[in-house]
Image (cartoon, rainbow, N blue to C red; front, top):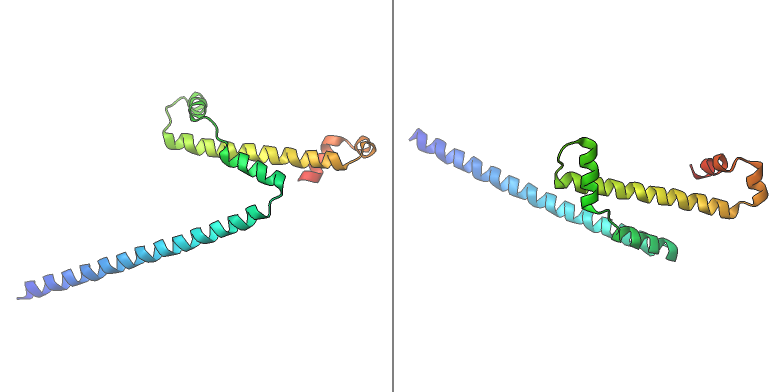
Length: 135
């Protein structure tokens, strides 16, 4: 008799624990969906405020990608071991971000050079002057 009541209690506890887990999973999914919707809305606001030149650069950035085969060869030549597809994808993404930062820094320096007159550049060492202004 005691064995039967213990089994019933165990199954009741398991059922309630399973329900609790299902509810937690459902809440996490709903929260993630809300966060994703918020992120999408923020991106839409940001992109809508871009100038035409910024929008063109952003579109090119979104469409660009480094060739996976080239990245894989490069990483394998540096590490000397075989790398997984996940490593290649991660390195490709990191490389894309780095290239984007280099382009943005170049844009900054180009804009400074456009706004600074020739006399001002000759008064300062141009490289140092530009580095200070962009940083």
